[in-house]
Image 1 (cartoon, rainbow, N blue to C red):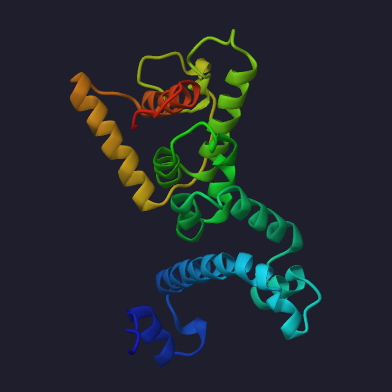
Image 2 (image 1 turned 60 degrees about the vertical axis):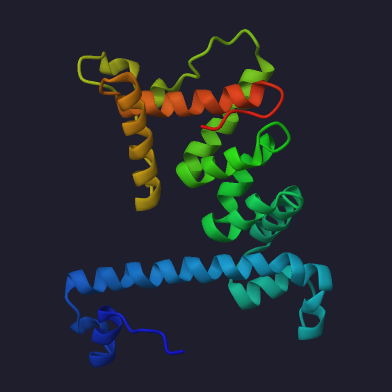
Length: 228
C-alpha cells in the first residue's frame, strides 16, 4: 500500500532544495517531519525491552543494549536506563505500558510513584490530559501531602498563572509549558463540564486545582477511586 504524499512533501519533491520553500512551507514541513520523528522514535523505544530480554544486540555486533539503542535510534545511555526502568514499573499495567508508545515514556515515568495507590485508568486519563511538567508537579504535591498530614488542602496551585479578573495577581506565579491540541481540547471540555455543573465561569487555574485535588483524593483514599 502506497503512503499518500502530503502537499508539503509534494512541494519538496518538485523543489528538492529547501531554499525554494516559503517561510510558512518550510516551518510546516519541519513540524510535519518533527511529528514523524517523535512517532517512530516512540515505536523504536517500545521495542527496546524485548531486544534487551532476547539480548538481540549481541547478534548485531553491539556490546550492550545501550550501544544498540545509540547506533540504531540515537538514544543515550541514561535515557535507555530510564526507559527500561519505566517498562519494569508498568510490567503488569497494560494500559500504562501502551501509553509509553502513544504519549512517550517520560510522561509515564512521571506518574510511576502513584502506581500502587491509584487506579490505572485514572493514571492513563492524567497522562492523556496533562503535559509532562504538570504531571511532575502533581506527583510532587501528592508525595508532599503524604509526608506532611498537617498541610492544608489547596495544594498551592496558585502557582499556575490563570487567575480570574479581579484577583490579586501577586498571589500567582507564572509556569509556562506547551500542550498539544488534543490535551488542550480535553482540558477545555473538562472546564466546560465544571462550568455547566456550577452554572458559572471557572478560571483555568481553578480548573487545574479541581483536577489535581481529585487526583490527590483518589490517591489518599482506599478502595477503587472515583473517576475524574
